[in-house]
Amino acid sequence: MKNTLPFHPDRIEISNYTNEFEEQLINLSDSQFGEGYIKLDDLKALSQNSSISILVVVVEKQLLAFSIMEFTNSVDTASKLRLDPLWLRDKFPTVDLFCIRKQTAVKPNYAGNGIASKLLKKGLETGFSKADVVLSVIWNKPDSYSMDKILLKNGFTQDKEFEKYWHADSLENNYSCMQCGKPPCSCSASLFFLSK
Image (tube, rainbow, N blue to C red):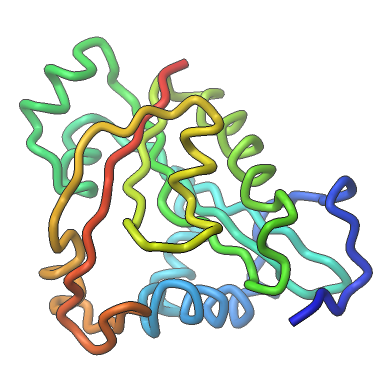
């Protein structure tokens, strides 16, 4: 499917999320990550949380992409990313505040135009304004537009791989996976990091 909106990759404008785009963001999340991965109540809570940053790309009132980041201390970071707290402390002994790059999604007919890369760069500006390390857990999927390539191109290091990363979470929160269908999700994921 071709781009249907007047769109020029060099003129991408990134702004902060507002709730007028909540339905479009939920729909894009459902199409890219699986139905129910981000629920409306969760999105409302995220958008009101001062430790969360949600960036969007909108053209003519159409949401083309979004990226969500969260600032957390080391204990919460380990818990949120399902990491061993001792490993995290040993890996980053002087870091007290992390930025977790949670999700980035681009409408499929706009993928490959540099939108995710520009969201990542803007997100890094935001992330490094407060934190010394940005962490991201990326779905290991065979997709030509997968985020791992964009992270590596922008200096991230791939560190760990996790089998069935969303297995328990998909059962607990009852969301479907784009790859696996109904819960449980059997997809693997990789941890990436970038230090200031």
